[in-house]
Amino acid sequence: MRESDLLPRMQKLMNPKFRIWDLHCHLSGVPGLTPEERLGQLLRYADRVGIERLCVYMGMKWSQDPSPDDFRKQNDEVLRAIAKHPDRAFGFVTLNPKHVPESLAELERCVANGPMVGVKLWVAKRCDGPEIDPLIARAAELKAVIFQHTWFKTTANYPGESTPDDLVALAKRFPKVPIICGHTGGTWELGIRAIRDQKNLFADLAGSDPTAGITEMAVRELGAERVIYGSDCGGRSFASQLAKVHGAAITEAQKQQIFHGTLRSLMNPILQAKGIQA
Image 1: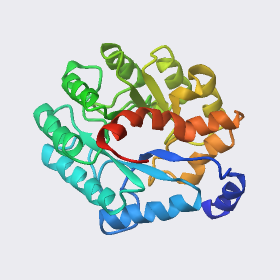
Image 2: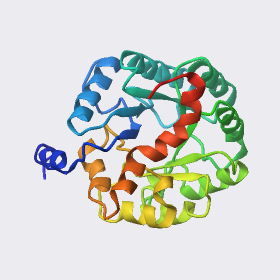
Image 3: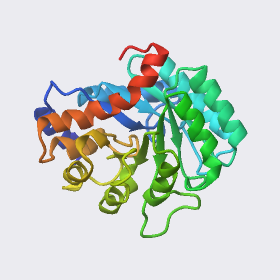
């Protein structure tokens, strides 16, 4: 089915009482010559399907192992984009654990002394090693939301790409720090089971195909209070990812928790610290 056919059906399914915040958005894969144009385009799409706020990280073009100059450039692009739309978008700072001093400096620039409210860690270095610990510790001090990309790939992960098992090892070192398991490992049946017993880990629904059962299993095994809606746009469409929650056989209260409540509870400490009304 084409997305143009799916959107009207999605709009009929949507309950206008739902508040929806999208955890997982990028500036790549979106039309526009500038960060401001690209975020504006995403917001036009978001308005069609009832999404109130977007969390944005990584710049217009990114690499798997960014140098300090590269991730500073990406963060600058996100800063430009969210400055244009401060009432609709939150920024997360992109860091690389291979470059700890420079990453700590970016945390200070973009979160402690800037408008960003979260941290995005991708595939440069697996998160089970101790090199990442100073970044997690400082992010926790700042009350920043922490997001770690994870995947279980049958074709083998990228060099430095974390699995949910790696994230569990990290989370055990920081048992009081909430951390989001990006994509829930892609192969979600394994990912949900991997993080189930580590209570400070949260499941991001974004990015995998909208197959039946992912949201129901996450709610059953983790509870809706540990599950978060995200889209992974512009790599994925809003409509296909929203369908995972709108079409799930769960209660409306659980859907609202996933669409907004869980992420809002993780964000509340830093939003209050920064005086951000949302």
